[in-house]
Length: 114
Figure 1 (cartoon, one colour):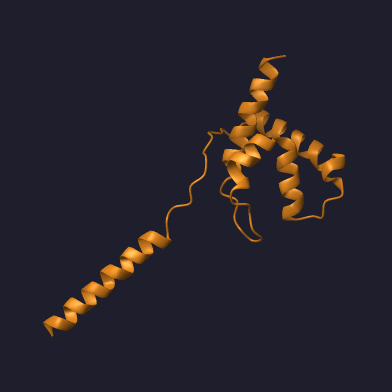
Figure 2 (figure 1 turned 90 degrees about the horizontal axis):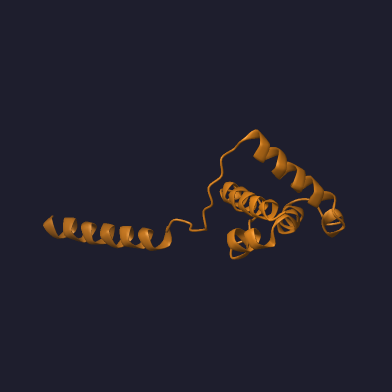
């Protein structure tokens, strides 16, 4: 009886160790973003501009279009947040807030220089 318990404990510990290695938290750069009406309007305006831009206008809908729009909005932010592990069909985009924060930082820096 004691041997069975020991064997079960060993198997359980090995399984937990496997889970800890395989189920690491997804890491990506995080940028702060406060959802404010003015920020949302700016973001949506830029998104619409890129959606209608010649570069993205003929891209098929779905993820290819979304990736094109985000690259058009900010290649740097796209590379920082999405390029190393692009979104897949059906994936919930937990990185969008960071993309908005990155884009907003770039927008403010660009307009500060004007």
